[in-house]
Length: 451
Image (cartoon, rainbow, N blue to C red; front, side, top):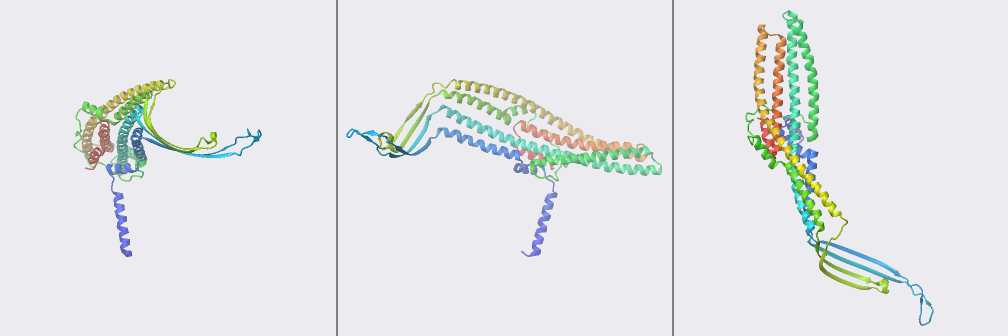
């Protein structure tokens, strides 16, 4: 590539990068970044992958175990002084060195072990619980990303409102000073505009500080500092479009599909299986045992000369536990108490989920009404400001009246935007309580922002 072409390509690449940087990121793009960058979600994924191995470990109790044992021994046998029967004198035989070795292979195939059966059932339940936990981690990521995203938007709105108020009040201040100079207004109007301007300046500083803090919170999720986030161009008209219409329908769906409830149900099932597992230690075990042994130098320490042995055996081994110091009975009572605790925890979570579902449903329905009311309030505030400014021109309204009308208009804009964001968060939380929060739900919420 020639040098001019290379420079041109670099400039084009840099221009494309700058354009992509300036483009506002929507909620879905921030979520896609969080999937790859959020450490809390990656930790949940690692925990999920680790738990998948429980099923293989539980299945291992039905498979044979094979062990290989090898040994090599060198013995030196010294018989000490002996009396010869022929000469009736002491004889000191030379020490004898005996070398022995052995290789033993043992294979054990469980035929009946009740504890292993229960352990395998527990492993399947643990994997099922891990699946639900990972889904909850994904839902939690969606909620954390959405909350941080909307918090940044709310902080941006506060800054925009503060800037708009400051600009408008500055114009009013300049107009009040000119009117005072020509004698058509009093110093009171000028002082009032100056006080409003100073107050708005301090509010702008506080709003910018809050915006930086909110961006840092989102940075902790996506591992980069967010610059531009896409805000709602207009309020969506399909606010009432919900999966279920009534509160009882949402509660019924939550009781059937809520994943936090499924996690606790799995915990109760595991506790029940733990009682069975411990109680199964009273049961006998039956194993098929096969053994192959190849040994040399056996018995050399006694006879003075070892022999070589090869043995093969196969048979059924029965073990019957008779008495273990009452430890099994104690562990059974402990497991029963833990089972009872898991049952009460399950009922507590069920009640909390029912309560949270009802609260989020009320937040959604009340949020719809609030957004509609604030939309009308914004229209009324705009009309009031137009009328007040017209009244100031004809002399029936003062500078203070215009400032108050502007303040009311900006407050209406801010309240409407925040109410809209709060409504969308309530929809996400309601879907999470009903066990239906997924990427499709987030896509629909994102579409309400990007219209």
